[in-house]
Amino acid sequence: MIVYLDAPDISERIKEIVFRLELDHVRADRVACYRSKGSSAKGTIARCHALPKIMQKALQCQPFYIIEVISEEFDEMPEDEQTRTLVHELLHIPLAFGGGFKHHDFVNDEMVERFYKKFMIEKEKEQKNIDFKDKLKDVFKR
Image 1: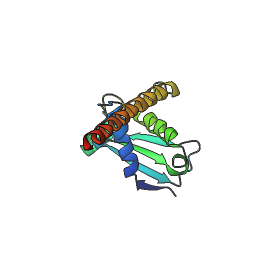
Image 2: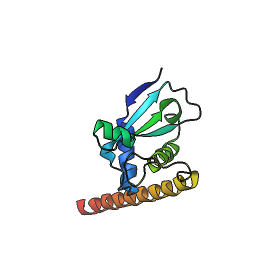
Image 3: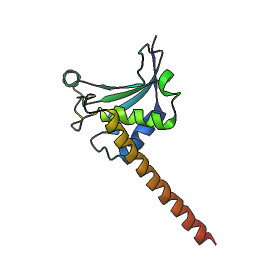
Image 4: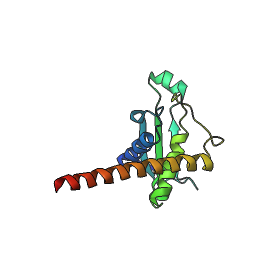
């Protein structure tokens, strides 16, 4: 039996990735993150689910996406591979953010790696900026 658990840690990582990569089309407030346990899916680490247009119309609601990480696979991966996986899932969300889905002809290893490298560069820039600010604070404490 599969169990779905709210994943606030994944949600925070998604928000960070969206921010650093400037994925302005992704409305992080309309992306829910879950960790599943007990999935029988083979070779699947994570999934992106979209609420199709017809469901939005029937439920009279806005577009919504779910990122599901499969605990048995995802949680054991190194952090860099987890980040690549989350980038991969975010790339499935199209610019329209309307309930559609970009398929693997667009979301491929090359595209994921390009976005992952950009993410790491932005993260390093921020860290250098924080380090610099900390050094300035130390100088002015003297």
